[in-house]
Image (cartoon, rainbow, N blue to C red; front, top):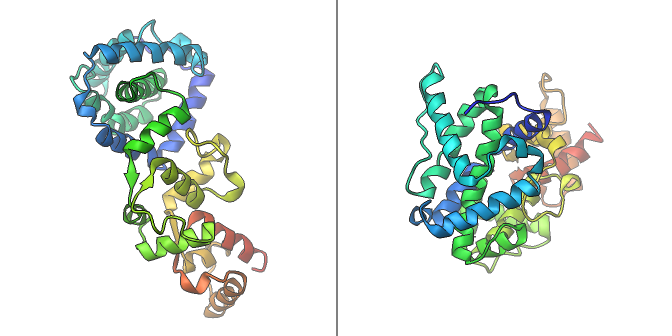
Length: 309
């Protein structure tokens, strides 16, 4: 398949999506969904898959993906064939000879599990921008087709999909604490700071929709949050900012918070640390009881401290 020169719209979508990848969530969520949905039991030869994937393909290309219609073939099956041929061509033409991609697989899980490899390859070869966009939609349709089969109806609207997944995917507070690299007690204190109390204290499991809300509340600054249950939690023009935060880490120590308020080349004195600590203790009652903080709470403290630094 000949790869055409990417349009401006393709470049924009590709660049924004690449920035979001650095936050680590998409691949983690793909893995999680595959496991919980038992994707290995789903086959592309299943007539139900053919039915739902065709419907979804038309819905997206006539709706939110209409701008990119010129780079897509007439049918989903043709897209599968074209992608397979393109990756075979890439495997033979790229100098590092590191690609081992084949979309003609029995199980859908095998297709979606190639996400990480594809992300790495396509991020490094800009001439495949159109291919990159096609793969995004291809994987999205595969996943939504699995959900539609199990939900026994065409499912692609955000709330409909989320309602279904809430029944399938649950998290323990221990799992969430581990993901944020803190202990259960610290996570509980974060909930108390964020919500006034640990609203999950008596709960053994947390639904996917609640997990998404927790991530947004702990990672996204309050002034940047929106009310979307699914989709992009971060606006495109803020991606660079949150990408840099993700590279630093999702948690801040007390020392990290204080140092964020000064010139990075400046060596702080013991007196400066002490003055900053006193100021934070006066402003935030929880400061003496918690040693690590998520991004959203840390930046509240950094903002206040910068006023007096």
